[in-house]
Length: 211
Image (cartoon, rainbow, N blue to C red):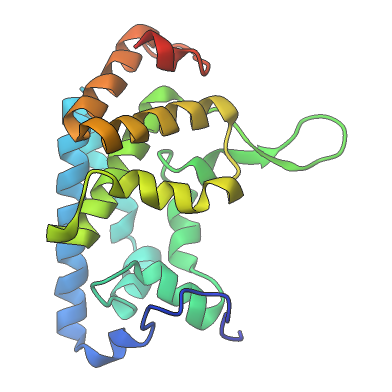
């Protein structure tokens, strides 16, 4: 496959070559466990204990683990490097198809008329895990430079290009903005109130005003 030329030129996608295998192996493991600890923090605050513990276990499968170690650089996702250098991230394709907290998992064809891809409404407990995941990714990669606005800013950069259900999007944006303006604890408490109101039942965008 040819190298993708439509990428972030501020990044050094060959940085992984300057690291030994051992450094990439333990660096990736450290990033994964740090990420999982932040997700666990968020999920536990929202009462999602099983999701907090079992989050992202597919990252230890060979399909995800091997390329992630190969392209690890410590400054951004190995998936991004794989996309640029090979044209695809097989690790990401595997990951999003097995983890329900990614909105990409919920993309399907429309049921009537001309078939096209659309976002299906995500169960609210997975929206909550997605929010913890976005917080955790920013906290893990940004380290001491992390600010409470990072999850919203990262989302906002690509928001107009994603395929996501409108009600799921409304909840996601409301909580990320709460995190930006009031911090993670207030955001997780806000999401927990939504979970309590719906009690696992269906929801729509109006839930953001009820919590």
